Length: 120
Image 1 (cartoon, rainbow, N blue to C red):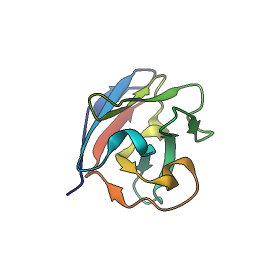
Image 2: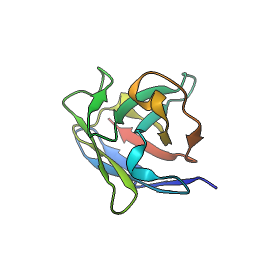
Image 3: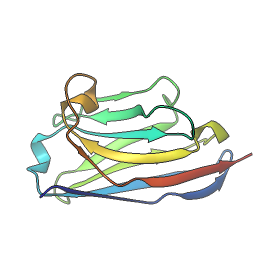
């Protein structure tokens, strides 16, 4: 059974930083692409960042230069460091795994989400 548990969300003022973490179990972590998505109120879920098994990364244009995705295969963890946060970054952030996290293919497994609120 695949489990993905996010943590690290919270309330931060604009310009601040947060680091999201996702602990993954039930898959062979090291061979799977991982990603972060977000969904703001009234909007569709969007892909924020992805990291392949070979450590290639990609980012949504809206977060390039501010967010950094990383992974620790020894700990089955994936992280999202978010700097220079803006109110428009407010959303529920989801950890996910599957080839689609790199832009092509499906995303079969998701975490339950962690709320990020950025105040002006």
